[in-house]
Length: 163
Image (tube, rainbow, N blue to C red; front, side, top):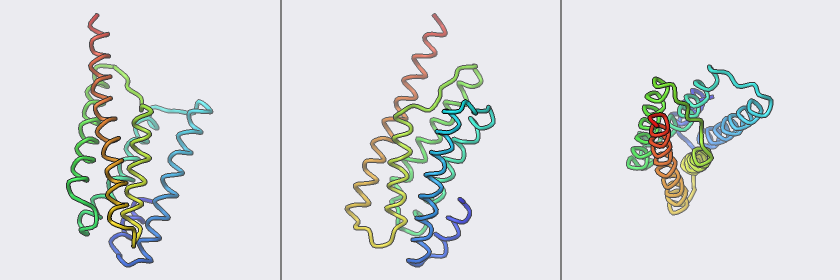
């Protein structure tokens, strides 16, 4: 759904933005449902563990980048979110090369939900600036917090391996 959401954002206009927001919410909900069902029924795969975080990033980052381009989403908020995603992805890649596993944390899931709420607020036309900034502020708190949590956990895991 990411390409369709992107096309709707680029099409501009209120109707297209409402449609983009609706599709974004459907894609977000289906992502959570997919993850829940996979864990509940022990249907996880190595490929799924790699593709799911990638699809999550594309789902959130694509609208953010396009909304920055449109002048709707603050560039500094996008920079923090994108910087965190790159840093955590590089950390996970580094850990994977050392055969250490770091699954998604609860805080990482909270971060995903708050980012999705913030993106939805920026996709919807007519939302008050203060509401958008509040949603973004909450998302940024959890973005930074969950990113820091991954680095602390990585350090803890590294120390345990050395011991």
